[in-house]
Every structure is written in C-alpha cells, then in structure tokens.
Length: 83
Image (tube, rainbow, N blue to C red; front, side, top):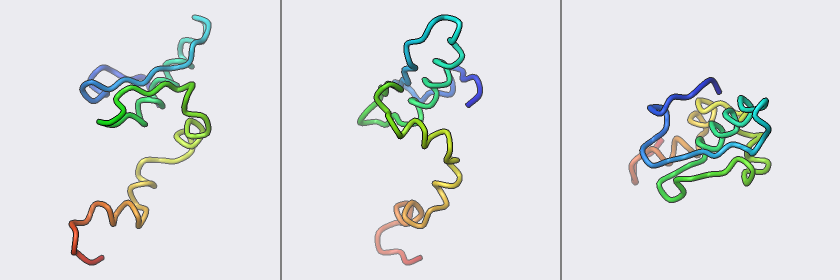
C-alpha cells in the first residue's frame, strides 16, 4: 500500500500500525494501512499487531480478486435475484 492521506480513511476509522523504532516508521505506516483495510462500522479501529495471519493475507490478495469471488458476488445481489 502506498502512502495514505486522511481522505483515504473512511470517517471514524483507524488502522494502527505496529510499534517500531522511528527508523522503521514507513513499515509501521504500511501496517496501519493494512489494518485500515480490516475496519468496519462495527469495528472502526483495528491494530495491525492483532491481525495475525490476516495481515499476511491482506498483502497477498487484491481487493478486485475478492470482489470477483462467487460468494461475494452473491452477497451483492438483492434477495431473490438469481445469478
């Protein structure tokens, strides 16, 4: 994930990067961006340190790939509409 601006974060959501020495601030920033991807209305603040294996998956899977999954597409269809 490239550098984020405050406009990239949905209102009221926050991704918290890992606590690292100042020399590694860019790594913490990247971790915060990863954590931000896992926020939701029900969980507006996510800590990278608590993601475990999900942090690795976020770096390997593209959002477009997830959106193309049949299960995800089914969730986007109105109830009663067939594929």
